[in-house]
Picture: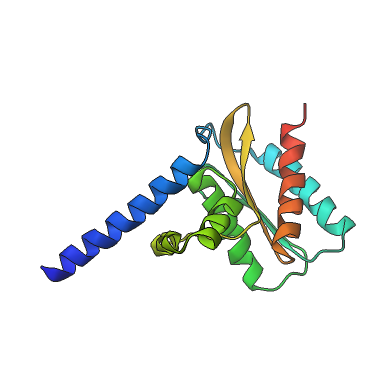
Length: 164
């Protein structure tokens, strides 16, 4: 019985943390149809070009609206970057916001540490939701260099799909 109450308290704490993150940000866009393979190829090519231009060894991961892997490119990056990049992409989709927002929340407020209890979260800068026509169609995550540089690569992929 005591274990059940403890679990309920943990769930409540995580819920409150998620609600505070949601309240602190503007209303995120809704989900749309999942990214097509053609869109993923276009975003991947642009992200890869940005990484190569800067000679950055990274992993670029693109997921659909369910967080399922659509495409992954490894540019001589460390093994750990495969899971990190995919985790960033999934986190951006699942929370409907850039992963930097979650990282900033953790850095600014000790109580936000409760979000780390959420399975599969990767609250590190470098993951962006892919928003086209006002709807999330997937996510892109990058890992391998500094977090700010990871985001530059991810943004290059995102921008190619949102350019008018």
